[in-house]
Length: 116
Image 1 (cartoon, helix red, strand yellow):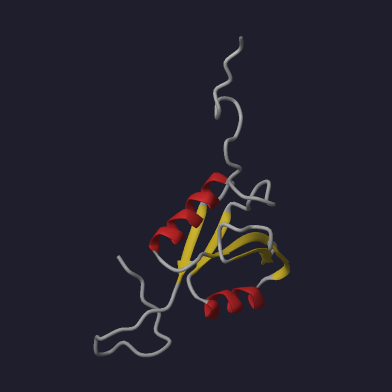
Image 2 (image 1 turned 45 degrees about the vertical axis):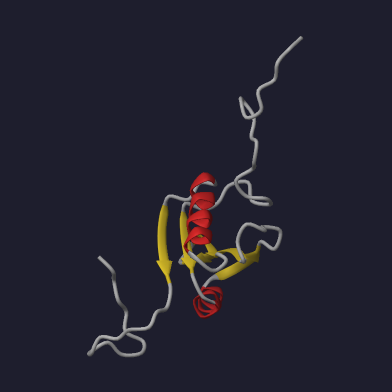
């Protein structure tokens, strides 16, 4: 009798349905506004509808470089899950873009804020 261990020498879960290997450069957008802007900014956009682990996913080109764009479902757990999937699929460089409110004077609509 041969014992087969699930997960040993074979995938239990494929990192991304429909994407064999993601580009190294990834953009994670947290709102529809950012997603729409990214889609307009990129060329040769290929929508990955079959990717059910995130709300929207697509790959495009920016200045000749392939970029993977992920728009996860709402919330931190979904965002972290999308990031982990991108890493498992080959992503190595990430930028996360979102929108937020502010209650600080001097911060205006459209200002870019870099959290540290």
